Image 1 (cartoon, rainbow, N blue to C red):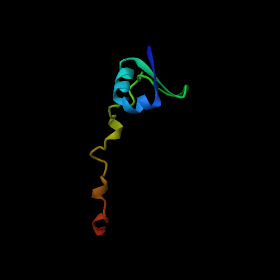
Image 2: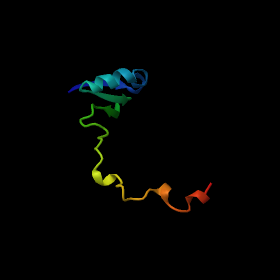
Image 3: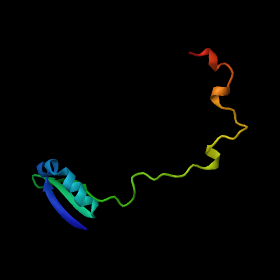
Image 4: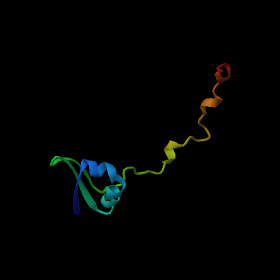
Length: 76
């Protein structure tokens, strides 16, 4: 992994380029007065993984729906 060290001011001005660098398997170390503040690294897993719905998450024809319940017409 390639590492690039930048100051916090450089990071503010070049954030898009630094993110692109990190996305291409690079690492960005952000420093202020020689002290490390943060690190940008590429994601190793997706931030969100979608799972397909299961059959139990769907209602069947026998299940009543909320809008079919008696009494809802009185609210409004």
